[in-house]
Length: 210
Ligand code: ADP
Ligand code: ZN
Image (cartoon, rainbow, N blue to C red; front, top):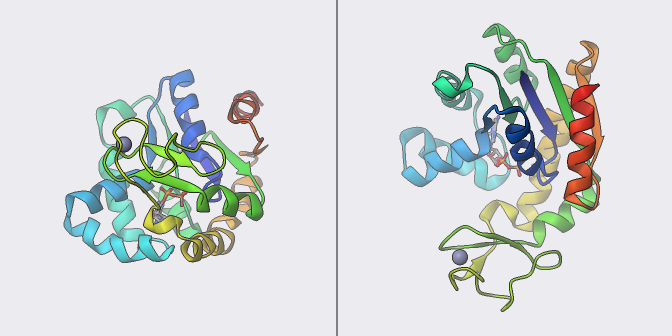
């Protein structure tokens, strides 16, 4: 099974991807994670990607495609996979088609911009261990330090309010048209994001059966 997860930044694609990946026993592939890893390791592609990520724009297609191809060539992808965060524009969707990859279903997680801004601007991550918190939904005991390792909680650079608005703009302009692209071929399955993560998961799993 080959799946795509669409949705605005902060819609919870990554969370749902984890569940589906266990359920179907296929890997979840997040281009965002691959790019962040490359940035952390300071590879040539990572260095090139940095300014785009930090401003809330898209990393150039050639760079992302190269990273994706390399990942999909690995052995664990032979029975299928979930693409989380790819494709993000029409060019990338067409590139997938050209690679001869046939997608079975596209789950689109729907959520309002207001809800996203609230979610992302409240997100805090531990600078030492990377654990994730939220000022309203999941505060740490201390408020400023990590429960697990007492590291300082910081705002991810691309979660700063101005960048969040840019990421949303990028989503609406470039990524959202993919709903029509996959709708035409009857592959699109919209799922309304719920307050409770588990509820969204139930709807997501149901959408996979349809
Ligand atoms: P989110 O979905 O919360 O924005 P991601 O982790 O999916 O977070 O992506 C973080 C950033 O990585 C994006 O804002 C973008 O700059 C870059 N990125 C991820 N996937 C792609 C892609 N397929 N094409 C171009 N840029 C990407
Ligand atoms: Zn920590």
